[in-house]
Length: 219
Image (cartoon, rainbow, N blue to C red; front, side):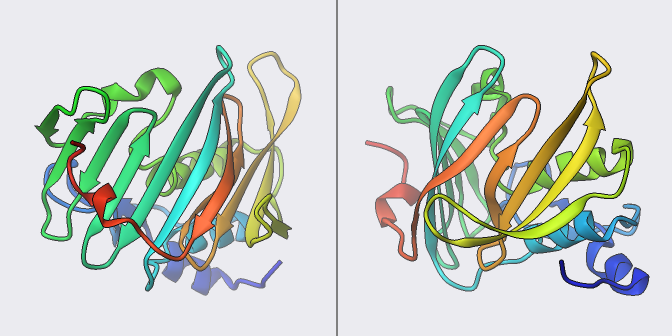
């Protein structure tokens, strides 16, 4: 685990929150003075990694299991500095353009609507930012309720890529102890794997390229 001083944690983590209400910006992180810094170094480490903005284009495919009901979903995120960000969860494609516009589309009906409609994937316990901002919010909550400091370590994903990880020990609603795990691709600033009460997320493909068609409404 890498070392953090209290000053560096406060500076790096001084809060990173999603810009706007999904009406006109890409899913990027911006500082906000009202967010309280994390005191847990391992938790701050993965949050800092998630705050990283990739400098190259990439595509990552995930297999996501919603544990309540056992639904399995394929998700693909693609990010390009010029094209923006495309997030495809099942048959829903969220588009965040570099110019600041957003839309929610169906790859089945080919219909699109302006803005980000999170209800389209809420039945899967997911959001359009499950791989970044939503993960940060989960980590911050788990750091608050954990029964001890998180354990940080270097992990390796199923696709052979290194990741920065943190395990949190928490007490569930039944009073049993369980571990929640978050691993992050530091080069990309996104979730690599996540195992929590309601979700299991794992990477099944990583490419350092993007398909421009992913950044367009489906047709």
